[in-house]
Length: 260
View (cartoon, helix red, strand yellow):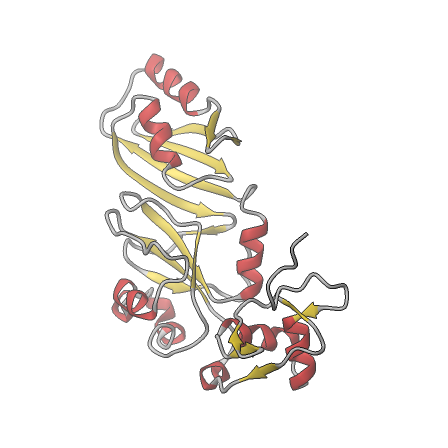
């Protein structure tokens, strides 16, 4: 078997980079992870921003200055993305895109003071989690928190999303039943079977969809397959996180008590 490139050593003597940085600096593991994801840690002269990377005792680990981290813990942001707004192709959007897409004027009023510095100072890298199709609206999660990033990656196949599907024309009872049946039929993507969606009518023109391990565009595809004319499609919930209290275009930081 070919040996993985440094610093991803498969040697049993290798340790996690976060553990090595914490030991070298006599700091907490959480602070070490913040330093790593901020891009200021180098292994053998190369920047490594993944706390789970494994390094050997003989490898050089150097930590540069990170003044932006002194203000506190990594942050996560919930954003009510408007329909038609395209997301960046890269998983790690640049600060310029973040500042344009999430202006301070659109922060949820109750969090104005807490959220003021989020995108207006350099800091740890942000990552876009569970993106939605540009035509859809709803909850989008961005984070710089290593634990949350790892949690979402590890549980992607079972993470539940709730979608609200508004149709343009009300249906009679027969067609309503047929639509629910179609929405709950099996579906495959890239050669793998996806979890069956759960669908229910919330009103004459609104359907609730619950999808586990969904892929971008899945809700819209299910609606099209069912022959529904969609007026609006919104992701209302991701795991335990919901859009409650946000208007279209608004955003807020994730509170310390909130969990996925």
